Length: 170
Image 1 (cartoon, rainbow, N blue to C red):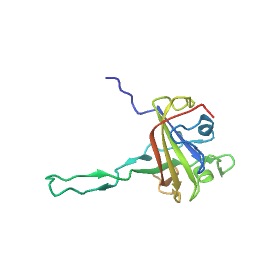
Image 2: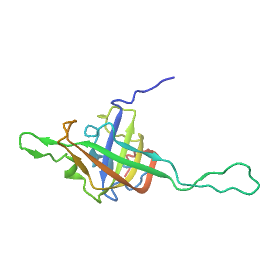
Image 3: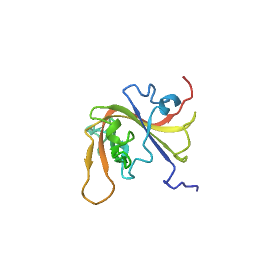
Image 4: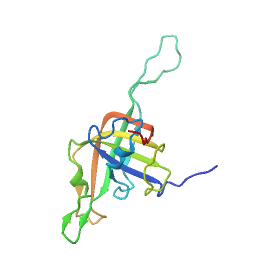
């Protein structure tokens, strides 16, 4: 049975804007290319995934076992990103998370699994697509426990697809 180690085979992109992706089932390559590549900024402890659905638990009088029915799907998100500091200019770089993400921003998190992260998006590739709003980024530092990072809580915005397909169409 072929298996794939989950290392070096993930591409993570943030496509900014409410309308950054028009069709979450088939994101256009042109939309994906406008995104910020988070792959090498993201700490491996980030979490974006589906979560347990809301349910209704009602059974008929004649049923002798509980009945649990899913109603509303849920998903969760939290970025853990390295901060980007330019030692020459002594300034935060343009790729620093606080330079392109602010409280209230809406955008699309896209994850592609299986190919090396440097492989460009191509027509027909399978993707995960999640729409989020950014909560207040949380920075930390001065603890001596690692690189400067920011945690970015993400608030679900009602749309996610686990089986989207990249589209070269217009």
